[in-house]
Image 1 (cartoon, rainbow, N blue to C red):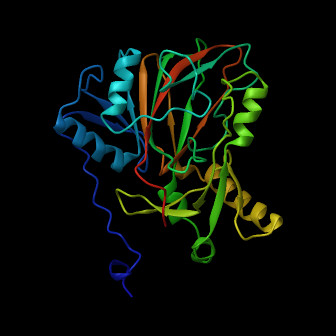
Image 2 (image 1 turned 60 degrees about the vertical axis):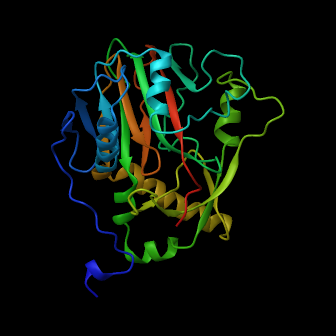
Image 3 (image 1 turned 120 degrees about the horizontal axis):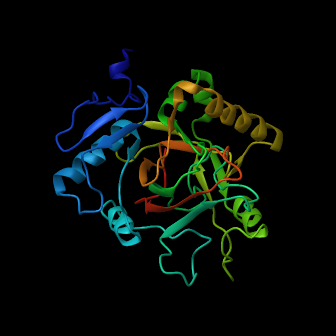
Length: 297
């Protein structure tokens, strides 16, 4: 049967390399674009908002250099795309902006959160669909890049037998591991009386906006595949995690400069914050946007 008539085939619109309200420079052919010509400190027009969403669907990771944002402007920008998420470590915290997750690594940090391939907070029943990280201070001697990976392509590059094996499988995503370890080291605020979230999601899901299939497991939160033995689950997850980390055509690299904001689709990407700048500092904050429903196959 021709591919165009296969029941699982979703036609992918051709990307437009020109946009009406801003200019782009692509980071790779498959993922990532730098955006120029927008001031994110002012409200987006309806036309700018619509075109940015399309660019996000096209490139999955959008980088906005030279932006001057205060905390309220950062949150307002996020709210333009949906309801804001409060991180499990900040719920109930008496802080001015609980919707902004602090990102601060320096010489006293035992590690930097995100130093490994992951998507943000996939342990939630309704995970985040988007994240906006604003970096104010970068390491003075260089370093501190973030790698991003395309989960559409991660799925598409798998062999047909592996794709068939993954269909219908679900995996558990648990926040207890990463978050409890961080709190034990004094990173993050305690959440009295509240357990860290844990949820089951399909291993392969369809993006609610594009209809495309993507791989939805990550090494930070995915603990095991339901219905498999411990050895089978570990072997299959390790294969998928190695595929994501080692297949470089999936990746793009974001080089941060002070006052850069990066907006990514948290459903169809993963990222890895590289901690190669010790003992220097990297400072910023992340606003994240709630999804509308649980991921589905």
